[in-house]
Amino acid sequence: MTTAASLPTDETETTDLDAEALGGDETGDETIAEPVEQVSEVVPPPVDEPAEAVIEAVEASEILVEDVSAKNEAAGAFLQSLQDAAIQIGNLRISMLDILLVVGVIALVITAAWVLTRLSRNLIKRITGFDSTQKLLAEKLSTIVIWALAFLIGIDMLGIDLTAFAVFGGAFGLAIGFGMQKTFGNLISGILLLLDKSIKPGDVISVSDQAGNESVGQIRKIGIRAISVITRDQTEHLIPNENLMINQVVNWSYSSRDVRVKAPIGVSYGCDLELVFDLLRQAVDDTPRVLKHPKPGVNLMGFGDSSVDFEVRFWIKDPEEGLANVRSDVFMRIWKLFKENDIEIPFPQRDLHLRSSKQMDQLVKLMSEGKLQTD
Image (cartoon, rainbow, N blue to C red):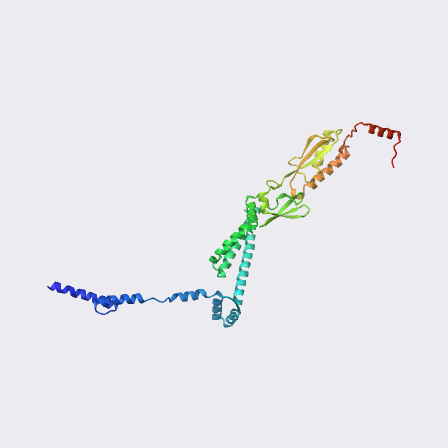
C-alpha cells in the first residue's frame, strides 16, 4: 500500500514543476494549453535588418565627410558644403563631392597605370636575355595586364559591384563579336606575329599600294592595330596585323638579311663571249654594296632574237637600303666597261618582207623613175 500511494504523489509533483517552469497554474490541464497559445502568438521583431540596410546605404562621400569632420572642422565644413551641392535625378542624388571623388579616383588610377607601364618598359629593356621581338611582346603583354588591373582596382575603389556588370558584360561581348571583331582580331594577330617571330621590327618586306605597284619597305614598329612600314621614298604604310596573318607576305630578311639581286643584260652575237664574262664579273666586283661571299655569278641564259642574254647574280646584306639603286650601279659599270672594250648592246631588230602585187610593182616603178610626186 505504501508503494501504491507514493506513485500519484511523484507524478503530481513532476506535473507541478513543469507547470511552474512554463509559468502556468498548478493545475495540470491548464498549464499545458496556455504556454502553447503564448508561444504561437510571439513573433520577434526584425531589429537588426533596418540597421544593416542603413549601413549599406551610407555612401563613401558621407563617410569621408564624417571622418574629416572628426579630425578637422574647417575641412569637414568645406566637404559638407560640397556634399550639400547636389542634383536629384529621380531617386539618384549626385553631389559635387561625389563627382570630385570619381574624377580623382579615375585620375589616380590612370596616372598609376601610366607610371607602372613606363617602369615595366624600362625594366624589360634592361633584360639582356630577350631579343628585340621578345622585349616588344613582353611590353605589349605587361601593358595589357597593368591596364586591366587598373580598371578592376578603379571599379573597387569607386565601390561599384562587379555583379552589376553581368548584363552589361553580355551586351559588351556581343558588341565585341560584331562591331569590334576586326579590332580584337588585329590585336591577337599582332601578338601571334610576335610570338612566332615571322614578322618583327627591322624586317624588310614587300608591300603593294592600291594600284598594285610593289615596293620594298622596312618594318618600323608593330602596334596594337597595325604595323608601320617605311619604304625607300619615305612613304609610311599602315598595314593591319590581320592582313599579314591571312595574306602572303614576302619577308626579305626572315631567316637571313642576305638578299640575292638579279641583273639581266644582252650583247650582240658578234661579241667575244669570254670577254663579256670577265667584264660582267669585274663590274659586279667594283660595286661597293655587293658581297664578296657568296661569290657573284654570271650565267648565260640563252640566245634571243637579237642578242645573247646574260644574267648577273650577286648578294647584298642591306635590303633596307634599296634594291633598284644597287642594280643601277651595276648597270652603269657594265655600260662603261662595254664601251671601253667595244662590246655592243644591240637593240631589237626586225626584217620587213613585202608581198609582191600589181599595185606594189607599179608603185616601186614610179618611185624608181622619179615620177611619183608628193604634195
